[in-house]
Image 1 (tube, helix red, strand yellow):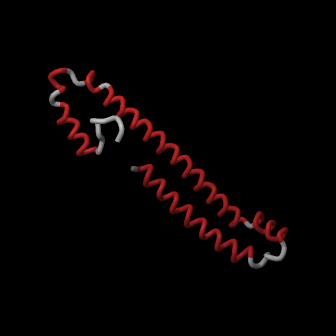
Image 2 (cartoon, helix red, strand yellow):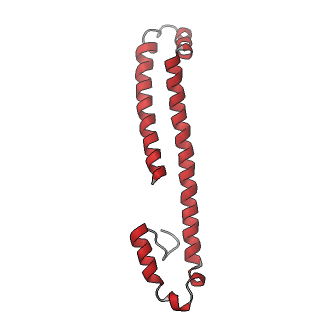
Amino acid sequence: MKLKKRQLELVLAWFCLTILYTVYVVKTLLLPYRYSFLDLFNQLMTNQLSTFGLLAILFCLFAFKLLKEQKEKKEKEYHDLRKEIVDRSKDLWKEQRWNDRHIVFEHIEKNYDINLYHESK
């Protein structure tokens, strides 16, 4: 859940930064220098605020990509572990406990939303 929240915060920050940056570039660079591409490009590269804004947007995109990869890795590990528990349930639950395993499975499903009855969710 932490990764999902961070991912949402980054998307929101990226969206807001992109809108603000676009408005800033249009008002301060595009309108005054619209007749000369070289002047526009020169101002875009030499203006510290526009350079910083562009770097901030790129940083948000890079951080979002990293968080997405972390989330996918953790989800894969979670599903692999859950599948392994389901596959090995006969080994893990010996004869006497086999009949009572549904109590533990129901508790885990109710409290943690993890289904251990089947491999696929």
